[in-house]
Amino acid sequence: MATVNIQNIQKHYGAVKVIHGIDIDIADGEFVVLVGPSGCGKSTLLRMIAGLEEVSGGEIHIGSREVSNMPARDRDIAMVFQNYALYPHMTVADNMGFALKLKKVPAAEIQAKVKRAASILGLEALLDRYPKQLSGGQRQRVAMGRAIVRDPQVFLFDEPLSNLDAKLRVQMRGEIKTMHQRIGTTTIYVTHDQVEAMTMADKIVVLHGGFIEQIGAPLELYDRPANIFVAGFIGSPAMNFIDGWVEEGVFRTTKGLILPLPQAVAEKMGGRDLVYGIRPEHIRASTQGIEGRVTLVEGTGSEIFTRLDAHGEDIACLFRERFDVRFGDTVFIEIDPSKVHLFDKQTGRRI
Amino acid sequence: MAKRLIRRKTLDSLGLLFVAFIMVSPVILFFLWMISLSLKYEIDNGAYPPILFPENVAWSNYLKVFEENNFLLYFWNSVLVTGTATLLALVIGVPSGYGIARLKAEKSAVVIMIARMTPGLSFLIPLFLLFQWTGLIGTLWPQIIIHLVVTVPIVVWIMIGYFETTPMELEEAASIDGATPWQVFRLVALPIAKPGIVVSFILALIFSWNNFVFGIVLANRETRTLPVAVYNMLSFEQVSWGPLAAAALIVTLPVLLLTMFAQKQIVAGLTAGAVKGG
Image (cartoon, rainbow over all chains, first blue to last red; front, side, top):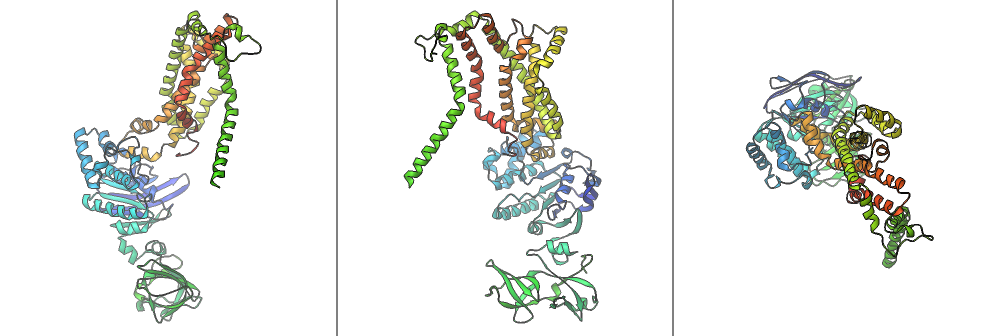
């Protein structure tokens, strides 16, 4: 187990810069999730930590060692790939023991370690099978087993659940988290799925266009997003953003919609162009307040998702209580002023 | 309705079989005629109208092949030349194919192809002189070395196709697991490419076995390979069609059997790289 320090890491392919000087500190035993839309540089960053991609500038430290220019095989890390990357010509046991065999660990010891990892993951019955005889979830487990057997300083996961179906994904998400709590190895996990990030991480790093948008605990990112990008990326369904300005203690839009604000904020924000952010789940149905016409209704049983047209603004709402609402109905909603986020329209930063 | 559908399907497959028969019929007829020739006495072979099924079968033609020539020696020469040239081609070609595929050095693959496309005769004469100076003429080595011109490009090109379809992630996983580049090649890339190695081995074998032009220039009486031996039967004994056809069939037999047994893998090998990840 070890800390990981990433200092001013850069990556460019010729003149194209894909990562622009990133700093991340990862504590010993921490579960860090790198999250962002495709092309944000998260996989490239992970591959640089793994040693599969050359570093164009900056330093990576694992524990006390500077590893930026060290070959992957010397970094003492284990990685789980999106396609599992199991060796097709080896049995499950051989796949899991491959790294130890390369290290010339005695066969008896390899067998014991493989058995122990297999028992953690429930793979004992499959040790003699070949990867092609396994289901997606089982392959995923073998890939994790291969990482555990190594007992490395850092685990790296590169979108490991993307190839699984929705139900299995939720199950494996839980298993990875349980495994981390049990073994406690420092883990860096890349995903584009913010739900995975929110549910698994001790710390989330939101990347966008090769820059870090925000680093923080999941709830911190949810409650206090640093900018419009993070606010829109974290949370599902995504936050509503409405352009306008503050006047006479309320938020106004050009189309005439009036939205409530917390008292303390309303007094000092006059005049500026702002973006008003409110999460769909922080909007309540009411008998008075803001009037809107329903343009979409999606019920899942546990909640009702609707889109409203309120004075020409499109507002998404998520209602936990069940009530009869149909396309074209007129409904009233109330917004809790304490849950409102305000952003500067020019910079996108939180105010 | 169902009846009509079945009739339609039967007609379809019959039609397909007919077309397939038309397409392969030249090859089949050619082979049938060769078998017929090899089983007829000279008098039947020259008869007009031609006879396909003779009344008296001339097994003696086959005996003659072995009696009148040093056929077993030539067979053994062929085995040595083709076997060594093919094995050497694997030793050279498989790592080359891997290197070219991983470094994406297609240009060097083209250079190898050009060496293959150059007419053999254009470099045979200088090479003959070279072998003479080095005193290798009279041994099998000149033929083994020059057969590499045939076998190495086949192996390299097929292996490039195979290694390109091996997922990069597997090799990355191995290097993270602590493997050196050599170990990655030996323990991961090579075992996965086994079908490709088998295919390139078989194809190189076939091309080398059937090669004629190198042998006719470089071989003497003791170092002849089978195709050359067959040709010599033609020139020394006038044209005795029966033994000639028998000899040709004996030469073709090993390759024919190999092709029949390895058909599936050969097709897979020839289409490798055509369908990425397929």
